[in-house]
Length: 249
Image 1 (cartoon, rainbow, N blue to C red):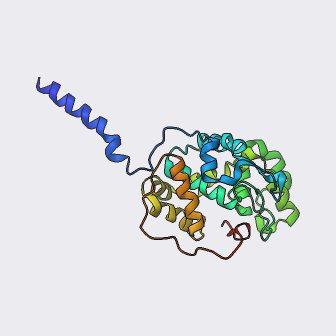
Image 2 (cartoon, helix red, strand yellow):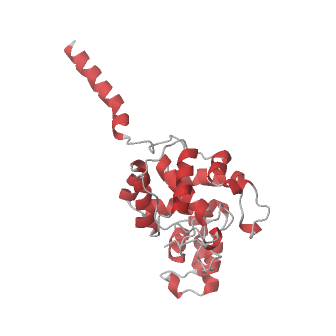
Image 3 (tube, rainbow, N blue to C red):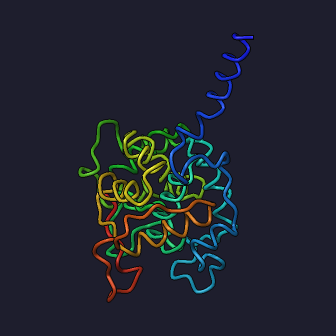
């Protein structure tokens, strides 16, 4: 009888572990699937590409959803906080999925949906076996991005512009460049964790317009953002959005 009671207590303790250790509201969704309706809540203008300034770069929510879902599956992104951060940064940097290249001011080699700098795009391309032969012809082994011509940088970026690659770069970057502390912060520390991701890993300002996309993404994915009670710094009220993209470092 004694051992039965002890065993029962042990089972109850095990059952309680996920509740105790999961942290607040941004924990596992148990799915990597993203729907078009969720993306439309986050990026309302992604309902259409009519009038897009670069029509060949534009993707609608229906186009985007399967590619983001696939990237989350590939890179193991299964928490609300992480998924919201990645969708938010892609929505912001790509003008709600209208751009895959940096047009403002127009930096050669900078692009994908999270607007990575060329150095990271080269590293990302190297991680994709299917691109190995083409990449080697453009970026010889050991060549740094600073040593490449503008044409070579743009040719390298062109390898990554297909949606299957361009919508997976944000997940690649988080899982290879940011570190476990940043990921844990996104999983459990609400706005504080998001700000650490933006300032510490993306290396840019956690502005209000960036924050708004993250908050909408958390809501769309069924979470509830834990805020610091303060607005993000550096809101840029006066400028046109597509001309305000900060470089992704």
